[in-house]
Image (cartoon, rainbow, N blue to C red; front, side, top):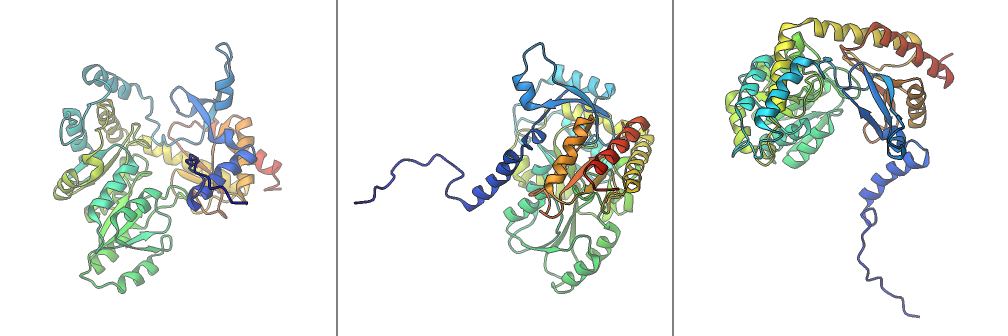
Length: 423
């Protein structure tokens, strides 16, 4: 009997691709193990030290009279500075909303620049200690755009193996030769540089604070290697801006090497309570990116409310250094408390505090049990981290109170004992 050929059009994007099949197995694991609700939690109101949240399935199934939201201590927020919801920032954003509307209806090179954008970028550059700065629609877009514009197929890029995915993706687009070096291994990096001709155009690219481990790039030593081997330095300071260094100026300021960093990228949606990303550096470099980076040329500009509100946020950070003091006090209390419980916080030295766990199943169980105790944390597993390094990721904030921290540590200890992780 003759075999019939299926002539119907395939509409299943999972079929026919090893990559999409592999990606879908991640979803299937969440589904099969009933962990999807933890990836679909809905928020109501401004996320500060506490947050109102519910599972998406409960929100969607509730009638108008039901209130599925619960108030929780928030240990999963990027609101490092605690400035999200500050009335001074909201007032500035509201005034801009009324005057400029929700959008500029344009891209920066054509009709998307307002006086608010120009003033904010100047203020941001002054805050960071650079000559100039430009903004993008996201931190991811900033890295993709910068790396694709500045690195080319004739360049060599040495990239820390734990750099953010946006760096990995940007370097793929650039077609540069990429050499990954072991995480924060300065000796290995030096050895790699020794084997590259001094006049070869090359870059060292690193996160300032590593988003999953919470440790900090050794920028002072990286600068010395860059000087020795004639390399450019690009630092992604997404988790350090408004969260590390004097007044929150970031890792280059912390190490006092601002003038030695060629390009600093970062986020406007973490320590700074807005949305978007940025690149900062010399005036010549920023002009190159204004007219040569796709994310700047082909994306609509930030809503005017963002530069308006964040300009006030920068003023607050400049004038209230106690915000950073409170942030790092809270960070240390949380980290030392977790270590005292007997859990592994890896090499955290920033407001990002991981709790390394045996596997992803226990990671999700831990997060779910804390959720039941009204403590919100984020479970992290593959593909965000290695399959063998599943973890909870806690984010400290200046907005947390002593009572918040004490209650959180009490419940973390309770859950760790319940899961037989400690005696």
